[in-house]
Image 1 (tube, rainbow, N blue to C red):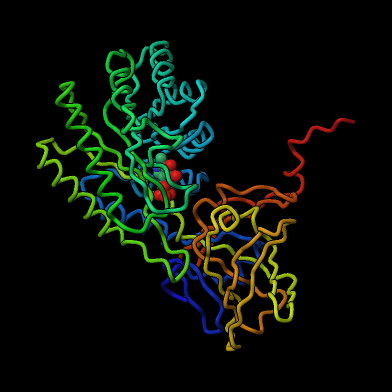
Image 2 (cartoon, protein in one colour; image 1 turned 120 degrees about the vertical axis):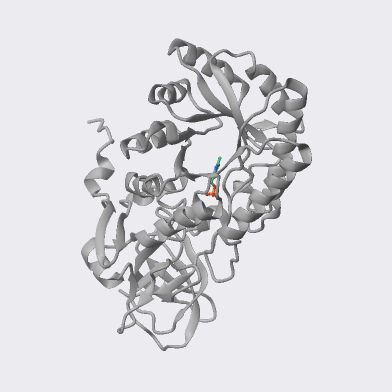
Length: 434
Ligand SMILES: Cc1ncc(COP(=O)(O)O)c(C=O)c1O
């Protein structure tokens, strides 16, 4: 069990029970129920530290969309990462978590006036401008508050990262940012420079998510630095901040082989160094914005096996007590997560089964063709790897399933991060009509 896509403290005790942070998952299931998100605190903090060590001299920002729960934000904040938010709700969560506003970055391709004003009122550190109308709005709102907004222009650099089409963002025909090849980035700078209450201090370019190699990130650094150099030559301005986004992939299964953060950081920072030397540009402060790589690997989901339906010559369907409402990734991206038996050891011959959720959808998959022990039985516990990113954040109440609890485990102790939803929570916002 240790290694692979599992959290750093994952182990088996003498009875073969999976332990995380020194806590038996059978105890967690008994005390907190299932489905349950279990966060390995050591793992989460260690990922933050590896990013900071892997990008010396750069600033590391946690893309909170991956998991914007207050407790998670506090842990990441304690480790010294900035926090990026992509909506008023994420901004509110970061402020409630006690993150210093000047270390918060606001993103979004369609920020409302209310959200922009909320960010100005809070005094966030940077606002990433995504459209022309936003420049005009920010100028007006910042003037009304007698302040100046420090902004990055979001550039769409024309880099096609080879990843799922739903998580590609850097190609020309994207909904995000100012498309470089169409001249929109130049137009954005020209529109921003005369503004009195908007100060362009850098640029931002995020090319996508779950990317495995370093080449697209290096290309991103080169394209954006060339743009900065051209703007210096054409406008006489030297922008000092360069945000290269997030997007490094993580291991969901043993077959995934992302680049270690140390190698990724070295490759990107060396590319920046070399390009700056080649174009004679003062090295900007580099920002990176990992989300998935910070919270994804730290967390597993515990499910209890319900029905098992073996169809002779066809599929054996194993149903668990959650599914697409707590992890939409398999349905949305055909994502695969490794699954293992968690509550005991088994020497039974593995057989391929399809693990599914309890929702009224055939797409409600947990994992197709999972090799699980042939004696898998009702009430066994299954554990699903790397479920910290874009799972709770995208969770729903489909079929009116209450959303799971999340717990933080460390050195044999357990703390609740999110309480389990109740049936009363489910109807709290409903307005009866009689
Ligand atoms: C602007 C921006 N930055 C950072 C991220 C984080 O990406 P990842 O979780 O793949 O690191 C995203 C994800 O979509 C994003 O849109």
